[in-house]
Image (tube, rainbow, N blue to C red; front, side, top):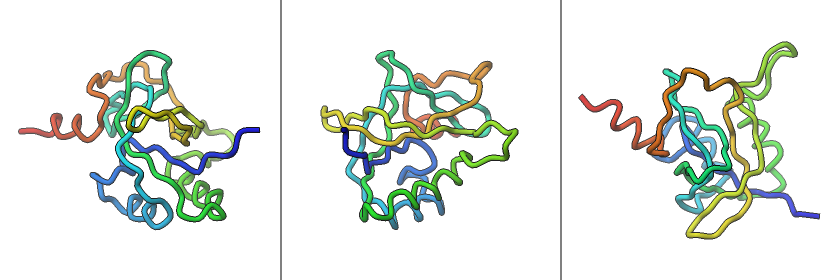
Amino acid sequence: MQSPSYQLFVYGSLRSGFRNPAYDYLTQYFHLVGEALVRGRLYDNGAYPVAVNTSADEFITGELYVINNKDEFSWVLGQLDDYEGLNTEANETPLYRRELTEVFINGQGSMAWVYWYNKSIQGMKHIPIGDVLKYLQQKNKP
């Protein structure tokens, strides 16, 4: 049996470059391993970029974190599930879904939890750059 992953890959508002309150929460329980890649595609939904997984050779840049205390992992992920919109009313579709996904750091693959967009991407603009921070910097240039 495969051992559970205590790693989390983030590509959006939980990245260190955003420095929002959710990032502050994340760093209370996880420590940064480093910049990493995951196979996926980014889209601009208007309010913020979203990501979907893919088997194509297209990658998203983000950060890989590992939990400080394994005993807190389930509880901490439950809190992040709330932040990511996984916990909804019975008749609502969750905004994201959390899946174990292969992540690459320094050319090595390992498994980490990733929050993938769980709704339709139809009509959204594809972001080929694969990096939310770089995309938002380009998008917001005067």
